[in-house]
Length: 247
Ligand SMILES: NC(=O)c1ccc[n+]([C@@H]2O[C@H](COP(=O)([O-])OP(=O)(O)OC[C@H]3O[C@@H](n4cnc5c(N)ncnc54)[C@H](OP(=O)(O)O)[C@@H]3O)[C@@H](O)[C@H]2O)c1
Image 1: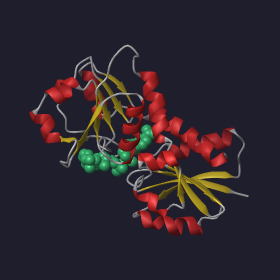
Image 2: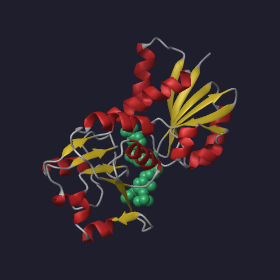
Image 3: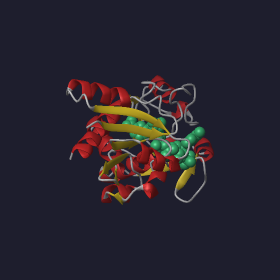
């Protein structure tokens, strides 16, 4: 029987997930497996999608639905529940169960990348679904962090505060972009921070992988910072999704 997997999100055409799984299914001779892109204008459309797509066995979830999707699931894995975001859904016997592979994928890739002999203080730009996975990974890594949001609220900086208080960026030697700013097709946008404050002592991680070098990464590299994009994270989370769907 045909098995359908796919990606739901508001705009999904930028994603590399389809080519990743198309190549994987081809390589592994899984001719009856297919990976489709399912753009949804509203998360409530997931109901109709699941009911009308014969053979639908698994979904990945992307921006902006990782948090909103939870109420459409029958069950949520405890780790994903704790994080508060779901990026993988397994559909079996009509039941939908949510998982989070972003957290482990971010954890594994950043843990390998950061030098072990340096202490980090992180600044996480954005407070959405993937930011929650990043925060959980930073807790696991014992890296203290602060959040930056467009909206003022307790425990978070705003971009205006960063502009006024230069010490925040100077003292945060790890800056992680979890916003969509710079993502294809809006490649000329970037998080509104003062890039002049970055130094060769800074490490910057952008969760975006398309384009490979966002304006955020380019500006940081121009100041001598060490930069990493989200491609490895995408591959690691995709493999973990596959393991969940096949378990
Ligand atoms: N490499 C990977 O495997 C991987 C995995 C997950 C996500 N991602 C990428 O990460 C990005 C975010 O995904 P997500 O699912 O976390 O999205 P999301 O749930 O919509 O969250 C994005 C957050 O970014 C901030 N934001 C949104 N628009 C903004 C704007 N115009 N200016 C400044 N801040 C803005 C918001 O935080 P505030 O409201 O607090 O400002 C928002 O909550 C996407 O580009 C996605 O492709 C990559």
